[in-house]
Length: 537
Image (cartoon, rainbow, N blue to C red):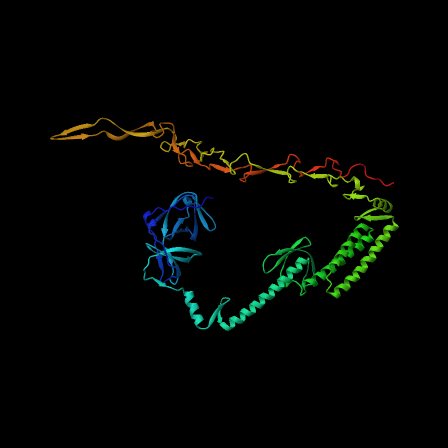
């Protein structure tokens, strides 16, 4: 939507003759109800204008017009005519077409206080708060109905309260000594709240939070949102946690409890996997548990003792896993099962397991791609696309395809003719009208010295003739209501380029890699190694 433009046609010289002088610190109070009457009875609202709604009545909208020399109200009737021109929104009215509206006086209730903005040649501008709006109004000063003061009522009240030894604090006037005590208490409260928030944030950064109900959350911090809470990602959920939600433990104690809980859960998984003879998964869980124990802080002996007990259980279970593997003639490498003798042969020969799939000799590893089988595409820097200057536009815009950049396009309603034919309103489309005519000749009668002229009898006969409005065609030519007879409509000279969407550049899929960002290694043909892999026999 274009920026709303309001054109008010009244005395132009009055606008340009205003002289503004700031008069900050002056306040005006209405001692009785006042109505500010606009200098004009009607006001012209141009099309493509949006005005705020000041008030709603059963049959009208009261609209607010703000101007540099004051504010005015106007009334928009709610009827079929205005509904076709004006779109009513939640807090404003948008004029699709122009209308002339009646202006209304602006009421200032008794006791209303206004602060001065500036002075102009016709009065003083003051800021009025009314109907949820803060609007400049033109006060016709001097006026006996308006009291002028150098201080506001709030300032005078504050002076009187301070004279009594009171101080304003948290919305109340209190004795100064009470305020000082409250300020100290609030400062201490704020300090404790900050310490609690810091404790929560540190615990979240460590990855473990212990709640008041002893629930242990493991995850990662989603960041400090404000001074009241943080977000914590745990178990696939994003939780909102406040300092009052967590247990009265230090972040280090929470870390100890959290790590011990993770060790216990990993040990439980390892026992379950061992019972299912899923030895790779069991070893993986045991290694995870051991890594948790290594993170345990040293300054909590009670927790270290519990960690030592769990560590002993982990080592015992690890021995059982390797004992079971030996009994089955199996070995584990990278948490994958292999026949023990085959695994030993590969490791003794210093073979490497490429991509967890195939054993190769170290000399077979492709030096070009490092065993990946793919190379980064140099043409697009591995992005899969190229950035190119848009050839279709200039500065992100192209000439409007409807008007060819002329700024006007042919009216679709009248096909550019500016008019259309409709049923003739004079003859109702028949092409003929009835005409009343007189008949007979005038008569001259002489009676003594007096001569009388008697005209023919009027409208004594009707005859059908061609309609003069439509020349007998039954249709009359009317101006197109859409283009108002011009045959064309306003049109933007340029539009956003559809190819680059105004960015002046566009992405093009890299033709070298086909958008993948990488290419098959030409030396190993995508395998990652050369020659044939060694085979254990």
